[in-house]
Length: 259
Image (cartoon, rainbow, N blue to C red):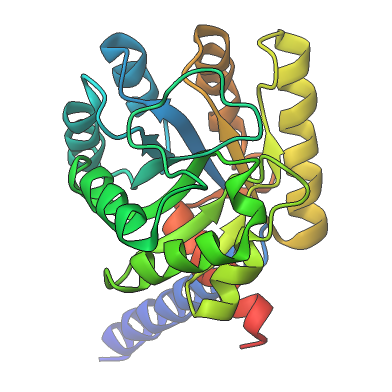
């Protein structure tokens, strides 16, 4: 009888220790700096797109509308459990080439709404929207209000300001409109040099440490994908948590709102 009681007590102690360890681990995870990563410009190259989707961890993928392989890659990303964003083309200050689905400054609100609807319908499994280009349009409050109204009318969508210009007011308009939103912190590959990738990845981690979370954007270049294939698995050991952009939007929006 005493032996049985002793065995039971040992099991209870082991269970309590396990609970304490789990609680400690969860508490530690809550305070680890969070990083979310978006790969932009999917939709044209199948091989590069599939390699990007195979990246380790909950990386998100922003798919250009009306592209030859956009819907296919969005479906692949969704099947892999990754977030899919509509990479919505907005007019840039200097547009030298036409981008299918672009929202333009000279559109009426009705034309704007129709173009947005066609673009979002072209990309399946979308959970959010981020802008492709947009150094002109993201400075205009009227057009950004139209955009946020479109996003609000589709329940659950959020917005990521790619922040292609320091004059962008898109994030402010989004938050004022009640849209959950965040802004990009770092472009990892403004050029494709390995030293640039390493420098900007380090900067992303420093910002995450300082602010608690950070958003990086990269592109499906061969050098970028090769770098991320080796760099992403090191984040956990370095004390970071790679999370979905959906999760980070919730964290950051609530932080801004003071919740």
